[in-house]
Length: 325
Length: 196
Ligand SMILES: Cc1cc2nc3c(=O)[nH]c(=O)nc-3n(C[C@H](O)[C@H](O)[C@H](O)COP(=O)(O)OP(=O)(O)OC[C@H]3O[C@@H](n4cnc5c(N)ncnc54)[C@H](O)[C@@H]3O)c2cc1C
Ligand code: SF4
Ligand code: FES
Ligand code: FES
Image 1 (tube, rainbow over the protein chains, first blue to last red):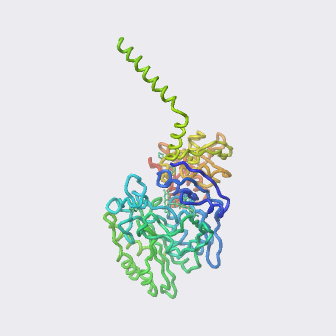
Image 2: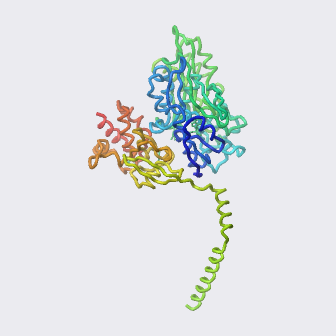
Image 3: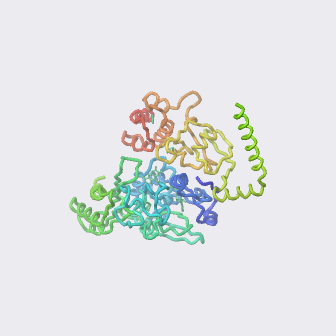
């Protein structure tokens, strides 16, 4: 690990004034420290922001505001989250381990890097780690990688579970940049596709800080499900995951949300399938048709063809479980 | 015999001559070398760290890069906490910080001031084992014992958090601790015994 200086700014203003490209914030450290040990991240200075940012879950208008420093485990036991946004708690519980959830912060979860094996192996080419060096995964070991939204520059997936639920619920990410300018970024625009800048995972302005994640009031607290399929039952990243939520009225689907993890460079929304579900009666055949819409445009890589049928089944099951679980 | 001695004498003269040349390098050149080295490899940063472990205050001077795990094992010689993977993937290094289970391999020591760390060494009450330690012995909760300190720290937290209503729940909330010997059944039994 490269040597670095360490400090703990007491407030947001102080933290932002010191921040520059060679300086990194540390929250839980569960991703940053791992990357520093592998010489993938090598900041000159590390800023402990654990007390400079909020670790409270608060009512915000008719919605909820989750402070950037709220630990993942705190989300899973909070009364407001459990009663009004239970999909979020369910997704968090599907991720990592109790120890890691106790450490991991909300903002850190959004900003965690991909788990593509070549990104972690500094002896191999990787456009995300070293722009212009090439992508080892596109013709390599890519069973964990993308099936939609990728290009020849990068086929990595975003590894978060929490983010899939936040994408489904149209959360917003509250940020403050170095000039103290605040910007609220809709969740669907927060993470990005590789495009020509595969080294960037998201649209957080340079050297800005995340202060909270906000979720507006919504009707998805009754019929929802988070399904995560992986190599072992727990403590593993998703091969595919599905967040499904239905707003049922008079035995019809008034509104639907469908998002996936493990399929793209960003948490992925299945808008066309959501549109299809609206106005239909919630039945096995409706769900099956929606699953067909989901997989119609996916294009697996050389090693992850299995994800297509796996995703189809996961969507169908998650929708079914919205009614029963 | 003679030849060998003369060879040794020549070798001695040569090497001592080389050493004299080395010693004669002016200080300014050495400084330049150090500067160049610092440019390529930045110098390590040390700082005084006050940290409370098992209710005992320690004051140590450590490198900023030090993890809680290395602080415990290398600096304080509290070797009960084990290093498995050093990357958050096995749970062998589990300790409690302010009463909550965390991974010491992914915790920066510099972030600890003001917090209370509990390790496996701090669990027993004098000679009396913690009920979870006793249960692991009675239920065969280990074989080689390498993952055990982490398992026990995690198990104590699992009971405290109240995640013991079923075998499935215990397994889910103990999934962050791997055991290569596969002592899982004994571990689950130990937890059920203490949770009762
Ligand atoms: C073995 C293992 C398994 C895991 N499994 C899962 C899983 O199944 N599902 C899942 O979702 N996650 C999983 N994770 C990832 C884990 O959830 C993330 O590492 C964690 O959420 C990161 O949060 P942190 O606070 O520790 O971030 P840090 O490591 O502290 O920070 C990560 C990055 O975010 C930046 N940052 C942090 N806070 C802010 C802020 N407020 N503003 C701006 N920048 C900020 C840091 O500078 C850094 O670049 C796993 C991790 C491990 C080690
Ligand atoms: S998929 Fe992305 S992260 Fe993986 S090797 Fe290719 S460029 Fe790197
Ligand atoms: S040594 Fe910390 S999790 Fe493996
Ligand atoms: S007892 Fe040997 S690894 Fe668990």
